[in-house]
Length: 89
Image (tube, rainbow, N blue to C red; front, side, top):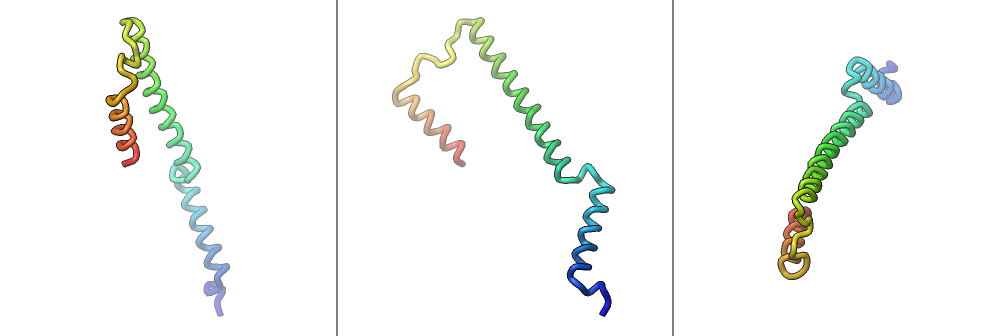
């Protein structure tokens, strides 16, 4: 019986081919992909926070309250339910 039929031989060939593929294309490695995605998310979050801080500063300069004049009541409950429904779906 040839060694190619043994399970450990087949698994070592599969592991070697996976290693060679990763060595030939390091940009396809899982750790590289995770790192790139983490950096992309950090940049997106930074841009969103900058936009929010610009809005807060503009409201401050214009003397506009951030919370508005109706914080409680039926309107606020309805808005919270709508936003929660949007997040859940």
